[in-house]
Every structure is written in structure tokens, then in C-alpha cells.
Image (cartoon, rainbow, N blue to C red; front, side, top):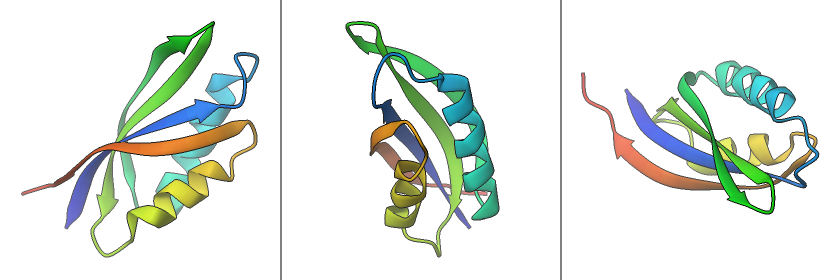
Length: 89
């Protein structure tokens, strides 16, 4: 079973390469058994954009693990789970 999660990743500055962060995030999520379904960029302020990733995450794994592995990416300031639902099917 999987949980449907939407997580916001804030880069350290507007100068960070968002595509590099997105690529590494996808790789790390896949390594942990997750499946990315959508990636968006959302303007925050002063040229800073957040990355919003919608994904399926294995229910047996803690969401804290997801946040930790994404925060370890070079150029990432913080992460925040903005939606977490149990997936059916």
C-alpha cells in the first residue's frame, strides 16, 4: 500500500538549479520505493520558486525519512509535507 503525498521543497536561494534538485529528488524517492507522479514549480517571493512533488510513498516507511533524504540534497533549504492521504486501490 502507498500513501499519496505532496511535498514542498524550498531551495536555499533563487540561484539554485531547480532541475538538478528535481532530478536528484526523483532518484532518491525511487531508491526508497516511492513513485513520483508530478513535479511543479511554484513562485514563493523575490524570484524564489518552490518545487512541489506529488508522489506515492510506501506506507511502511516513515514520512520523516522522505523529508530527511530530500533535505540532504545540495541546494535544498527545507522540505514540508503539504498533503498526505492514504491511497486506495
